Length: 323
Image (cartoon, rainbow, N blue to C red; front, side, top):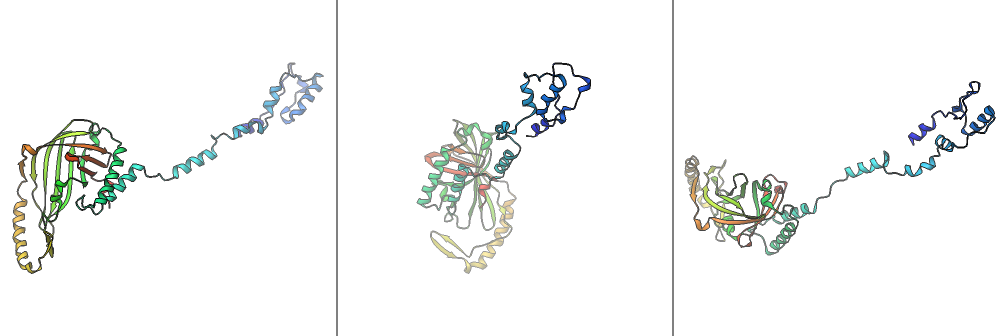
């Protein structure tokens, strides 16, 4: 040990009960400890004092007596090496993250649940159940900051949305995004569906107020609907064929007519784009609903609505939205 080795180099002075004789002063630091007794006997004629055994023990220290201290794990070497090794070790993904990733991966090809097979639905239900059992936010309505923001619908079992998402209902229109935006400061909710067509994009949304009814449940009261102003697309693309009621219709024979329609529609769209959004009231019979949040963290939310339907939403900007 560094301290012990330095201690061994310190000068050792002989102690005596008798005053030292000037003519016999020596430099005992250069003598071995065993010769000190002989020097005292020669100088005084007396034996050295035997009541000072501690002096010998402190002057000559056997490193073996400090062996236990050498084995302590608080030294500079091994402990630092272990700590550095632990810091460099990559972190394992948590069980919750693995479940979330597996759930999001299971949505692939389901078109938000519209095209999901019965086997895929069963797998999704199982993963949702496991996540709900590990919910890190058991009282979502008491963590409104987590609820804040825009949530993108990734999957739903609510059949009421299926006709809206189906291409057979609107052959030339595609549902680009279904979202829900929550503002916990004003206690408002906006549900929105964005559509894209050959000429323009638009959206239909509903504005509502919500009230907290329990640690997990909120009551929603819809106030109005809004049809957004169509926005012209950069380029007009007409498909070669469309599917309608299970049959494909070839549009190539109508190219000339379509071009004329495109020009007219473009002029109409420009006129419409300058108009404000259209707002309409929602009938009282359909103005209220409730929503139960069964899982919530910073980037994933699972909610259940009327009739037991489930909604899985991902926070806008989350890495879970990346392909």
